Length: 412
Ligand SMILES: Cc1cc2nc3c(=O)[nH]c(=O)nc-3n(C[C@H](O)[C@H](O)[C@H](O)COP(=O)(O)OP(=O)(O)OC[C@H]3O[C@@H](n4cnc5c(N)ncnc54)[C@H](O)[C@@H]3O)c2cc1C
Image (cartoon, rainbow, N blue to C red; front, top):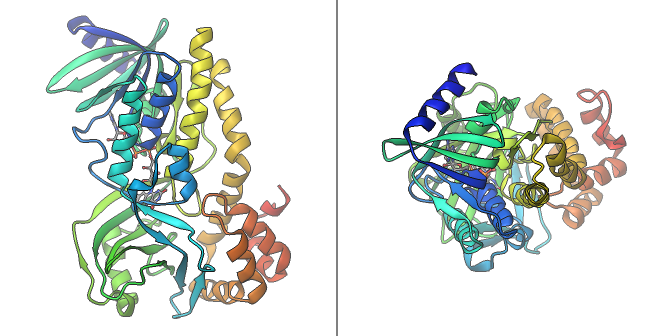
């Protein structure tokens, strides 16, 4: 702590200084949306990104709901494909098909999304600095001082409010003593050709030998192109997991020709500190990722909007204390709290499941009454309500939740 303060002060002595109302670190969806929201209030905002190109390298499969693009304020120009449902496979070979023919999700150009959001932040008045990497930060009178490396030089930037939108390995969270995720899932993805791939359905593959603690997936782009991915949470090296995946599901993956693997960490949500004096965290930096699916684009955009609303009020009042900024976690909890708590409970159940359980569960879900609940009420952004209805309709589901959850999520 002492060392990092010394480091920042030392940088400050040597280099020119800039002062902002808000500096947002990370130009992913969360950062650009937060910068846009604050700049719209007329404040001086800097959006800082370590890479020279926005959105690159890609570490995402780009499956989102239509409401995600609405939240982003973007049109359908980024949509590459529409999916109507999912085929879910258990290791036993059992398959469950979900969906009733209506469009459920969009496959988007994720790099394009990041670029469009960063542009809209700039159009709203935010300054964008690419190739600038946050090295360290410390609180000082009236705000936060940041040491930023850019083109081999280190400069000091000063701000009244620092927003960490710097992803799963957030340096802001570490520098400001705000902890990190309790659980990380390692994800690998690649785009490639899968001959005969169903254009309208996502495929999800579960099984403890295949993707322990998580799942593998293919997302169709059309014309045989898919985005394939695999996640693993139980100390299994992702590349080793992909070999097991290809062996176990050889029949479904035959003829696969892939491009380069890209990887990333999915910080599974758990209750976290997201504000401190002069500091806020949003998106993956705050672990705002759906615990059941790892989807983080939609929650990061909504969280950024809530954070920027609270930031504007706090900046106007010139009160950047934790107490003032708490309007953001309070609003977040109203929007997502119950959903994410249910998701975390479901995840706890999921992690205890054996391959036999997966098979049994797909059989139970395949019964007509449950299938119709899923097809009517299924919502990738808010799955909790659907699970609640299902458990109400089918007491057999209790067998799965009763053991792992001492206090059932159904009652919250
Ligand atoms: C394999 C995989 C597949 C996924 N698929 C999906 C999916 O299909 N749908 C979905 O909704 N979600 C998906 N996700 C999750 C989704 O990618 C994230 O939740 C989302 O990107 C979070 O956005 P963010 O802005 O918080 O963080 P990021 O998108 O990670 O952006 C953080 C930014 O901060 C920058 N940065 C980091 N450190 C610094 C620093 N020190 N200084 C300056 N800049 C810095 C980074 O370069 C980056 O641009 C997937 C994740 C993985 C790993």
